Image (cartoon, rainbow, N blue to C red; front, side, top):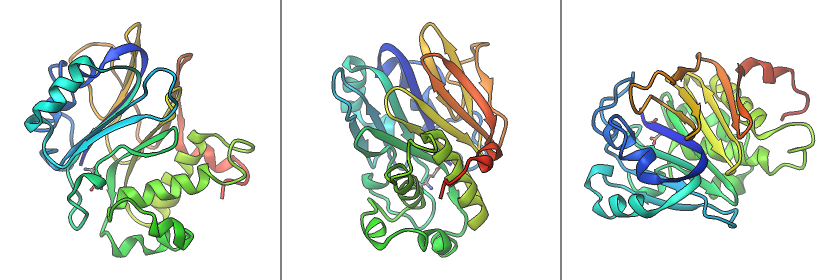
Length: 259
Ligand code: GLN
């Protein structure tokens, strides 16, 4: 299913990350190289980025294929950022087709994307949905499995325990574990607040590259550079300006009081 990408680094044009690389997200919208499920990502796209001195990201989403949007090509050429999250979408059957369903999903400083699906949506998602307060369910941005998973992440990020006992990366891993336990599916997530990227590899492909151009975490490499590393399945990746850390997703099971 979808392809997504997160970036942290020196100020970089969106085009350098998304459209300029030979096999970047733009090309991946019609010809991904490593996608195991689905062949194209033409059901919309979204890009979110942080501007200097504003903790809340800007977001541009459309329901059309990325390659058809001339306005985005212009925007990407002149917009630079130190932290970006972008995705091209291959919609899961039975989900909202409009731009409200395209990642990134946002709340305050957070941006989130889901590459994968809850199998047999929506029936199989009932157990997960039942763990959320009704107000959270009513506030879902779109009828799509990814919006439900984002609500589960946000519920934990906004709980009084958050930050005391656990980090955003713990939250992400916890939701991937809980979702997989409640329903079979693929749960590759990206979460950023503009200074840290947390990512899960849980059923789909994930790669990273870090050098003086910055750190990119992406569903697949955007070129044939030797610096790309594949993340093993069932891993949690955390990237900051200090480096990239990868651990088995199950380690989060040992964290106390994550529910
Ligand atoms: N299930 C999500 C959607 O429908 C993500 C799909 C994907 O990874 N292709 O948008």
